[in-house]
Amino acid sequence: MLKVKNLVKEFQSGDHKVKAVDNISFEIPRSEFSTIIGKSGSGKSTLLSLLGALDKPTSGSILVDGQEITKMGDSKLIGYRRDKIGFVFQNYNLIPNLSALDNVMVPLEFAHLSHAEQKKRAVHLLDQVGISGDKQKRKPSRLSGGEQQRVSIARALANKPKLILADEPTGNLDSATGQLIVNLLKNLAKTEDTTIIAVTHDEAIAHQAAITLHLKDGKLVK
Image (cartoon, rainbow, N blue to C red; front, side, top):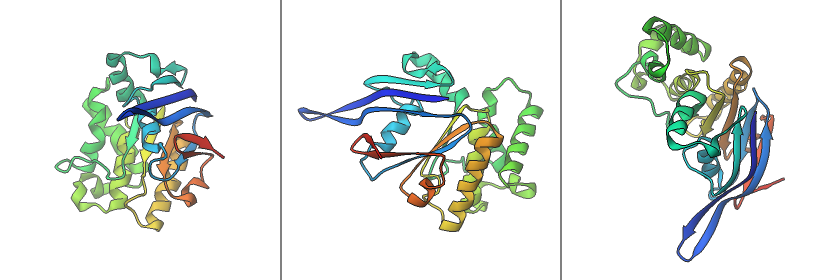
């Protein structure tokens, strides 16, 4: 489902070029939960930005569900990010003055759905991640960190993306809550038929993934 071949991303640093991602190749099957692990500066965030089409590689290719995103123009990339990719962030990035339900409905404004269909989809996703009843009407400030991350995951799933990219999704959570989020992501990869990749520095999380990519100095290591 995700195929990366000979991926390189170079940055200019003074008179030198630095390879933040250095000739990386890998494949991840559909409906799997995978992780990218490595120390600070290993290239994790750069690789995630490339996979999410937030940045363009110096060379190499990225294929998602048969589409080579590295050959897309800027206008096509906007649509691709909107329709095919979901993002989950360490800091949740929820809109503070909107309810949990309305936060999940935001990406659906661009879908060809009636308001009633948008609401039905959002309610279903929130129920799936364990945010139900009155909690769906609450603003983020009235939810715990774990609950806010669940809302963020539901929002990422709104447009039925082919790929979800999670940047340290348990970074601001205690270990018990973090484990619940990992379990949720693993289950959702299967039930929602989407590939989920999480960047983490936590070896315990990486051990639970179907595939773990270890990065060091921009290169994949075993």
